[in-house]
Image 1 (cartoon, one colour):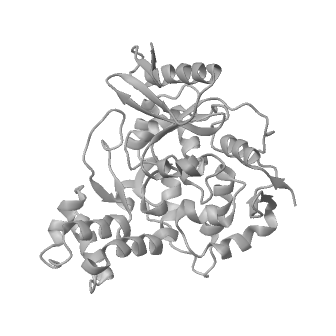
Image 2: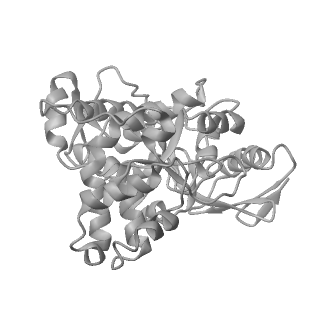
Length: 367
């Protein structure tokens, strides 16, 4: 079985994640290909798409959100993701049990004894008037019947697990600050969530395996589980295993992949890329060593925005007083510093709508 070293896996990841070169894709197709973008920080998907698409215009994503073709909702790992409406409706039922388990894991004591079916029915009744509500508003409307859990526990259980719900615009629009308001997905999208297969098969799980490998492969089953948070995937993997090819990594783990999927030469040059907080190019794996050193792994869950240099996390970045500030995690060569500064200037122009902004790499500032 072919062994793929860390650099080979890195270049495959960059290619699948549209980070080896910017893609000529419509925004909707990019969101679908990536199986959604992590989006609990509302502005971060814009940077994620800017780093992946040629001539990305934020207005295109705004139009998809207001046009109800992409949706912000709780899904993979119970975190807020930006997904196509089609994927949300197709995948939501497959995530129901995981979402409930994760909320109950956080609030088990507060929610002990609560009848989940009764609570869900009451929550849907409150939302039946079609009026968007925030999580606290929904919880307060039901607190008379369930006074013990508290508003936060009730709200997170309702819109984070029991009721498939969309976070409505203007939340998530470009340069817009807005609170979170919810409506049930069927109300917002005009179509019911797809039910589980009646014959007990798992076509959604099989589809998730294929889609994940297209965007993240080659990958181990543990990587797939880390990305979506779902249990019960061995059956889905078994259902499609005959379609897949196998590799091994340097640790001996089996890696699954789609036949003919991109596997660039490990020597392929990788451009500097600025990634947003919680980007799935890092979080989408159990073993993240293909893109980030173990010493810096904590950055990926702490919300740090990172810079890829030669395909690996080599710096963090932020914006301070109209300056994109890059903090290296290792020493840069002169050419690397120049490339980081150039890409940083492009990012600064994007974030400032074409206005001049400065870039500081370490202690050096350029305009």
